[in-house]
Amino acid sequence: MFPTIGDLVSYLFPISVKVNLQTFGTLMALAFAGAYVVFVAEFKRKKADGTIRAITVKETEGLPASLPELLLNAGLGFLLGYKGLDVLLALLRGDDPAPGFLSLQGNIVAGLILALVWGAWVYIDRQRSRLAEPKEIVRYIHPYQLMPFITFMVGIWGFLGAKLFDAAEHFQELWYQPLEVLLSRSGFTYYGGLIFGALTYLYIGYRNKIPLIHMADIGSPGMMLAYGIGRIGCQLSGDGDWGIVNGHVKPAWMPQWAWASTYPHNAIDAGVYIPGCTLQHCHVLPVGVYPTPFYEAALCILLFGIMWMLRKRLKTPGGMFFLFLILNGAERFFIELLRITPKYPVWGMQLSQAQMIALLFIAGGVAGIIFQRKKFSWI
Image (tube, rainbow, N blue to C red; front, side, top):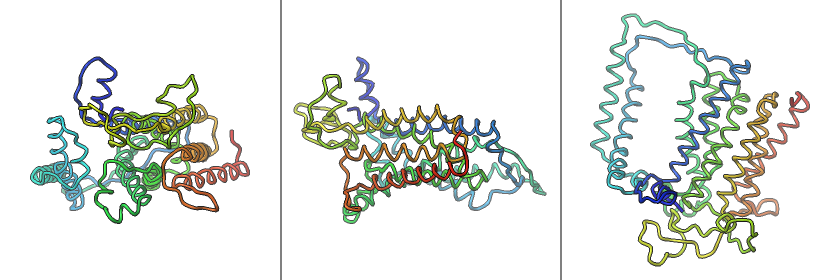
């Protein structure tokens, strides 16, 4: 496996590269980038065909910076300085920056300096444009221009949701070791990130008076693509999201790593020590397990392709969203059969947290389609 980008580059090319940029984090960034492109394309298409309209924004020019604006910018500056300097120094030293980033430690001096700089910058900038008599203006923005703000907010709330859902799934560990669980670099639940991120996305649409059903349709293909790309990161890094032991005989046509992988040099150091290994991560699973992240990556990217081909045919509002609920729910429900996750008794069955949510997704998608067929036509 390739916990860092340097490990991946050294494997692909006959050169030794030491780049401690985490593979999982890099693929998550690429997942956001891919989703960003798809979201923008769908926003533009829906705007062009008249489904959504430009957003009217009323602003008052010439006002000084308000106290909330100053506090917000100073707070962001403090966080960036407090954590950013330590992360930068770790990268320059060739160390892994993740443990420092996911901790309470930081550089308070750098945080205070950057808080002062950012707060002063906003104050001075607003003072320069201050008018004796502030005036109200009306401007129009295209919905896709909201994407930088949407990406930032969805990233923050999605991260928190993924962590909180994972903590709830491992409540006993959370009870005895709260900081270790909450600040661990591993342990993120997909549905937690999806639900919190989706609610944030829909709230931004609501605040800007974009119909929520159209927001849901626009976001569905991008969410499927982002999940597929993110799972590539799970597979390449070996972050622990693998499946149960695969004791079946491998088909001749399938590579070993795609049938039962032992995840050598995995990012979480799970398994047994590899004799003679001198690398940073020197563990391998003693038996092969189903590489479920690979299965999900391939399947979700394929499902994204299907959704992308159908997007212009599904003309009824909500059609794409309901299709996403069914496809995503079905994919996750069956993959969970191969994964190592806590199970709970539900209606005589043993289901994981993800399977319960997946069933709700499928039920919601089917109910939406039935309602659609009574009220609208599919095409």
